[in-house]
Length: 280
Image (tube, rainbow, N blue to C red; front, top):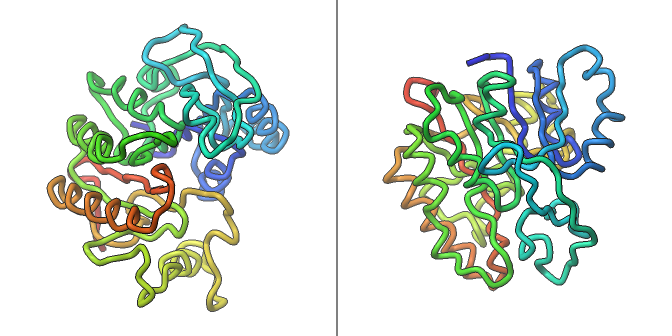
């Protein structure tokens, strides 16, 4: 494992890569959308010239050198190998492309096992994780969307899939993070709870990680669209597998009481290998 290396699987517009570079890490970033990679090469040309950033245009697939279809959505955040995701909420896939697929395992073999791997690839997250099942070495920390659904998906069928796979891989410590506010969820109600400040953790990250002293300033003001801190920088406490199951079951049900689209429960799992975590 290379402690200065991070993988950003689902580069998009570089929202997360920008933060990782700011923190002094080297980054390998992957995206299937050619225009996102082209834009990234313009935005981060200095970091690429310095050897701090590698940008790769691949679909993260089950096997190497496959050429699966990829749907470019009108909403660039929803471009996906799954048409029902690219076209949810009335959007359309404006283009269908084919390009080389590589497994996440193969990318690790080629570029090194990172300290942390962020995965956000609109429905292919499970495929990425599955390729790591037989890996001898894994990242100390990893994050992945809890689920990625289409308009007509049955959410109860997906609640535990990602968590179960992370546990199968050997991860034993978990945090459930709301991606809009970056709040680390606990056993208390969060969605629709008017008694809590949903941006409290976001402000604490601005103070503690970015060292911004102005009251009420949010981390997301500086790194808009970023999925936030990771590893031991995360707020809250790490929980075990059984408690993690209870957390996502509770919060997904709470969120869906508000008559939102089934895909609107937008959270990440952050997971850590045994002996990787520090709670203070």
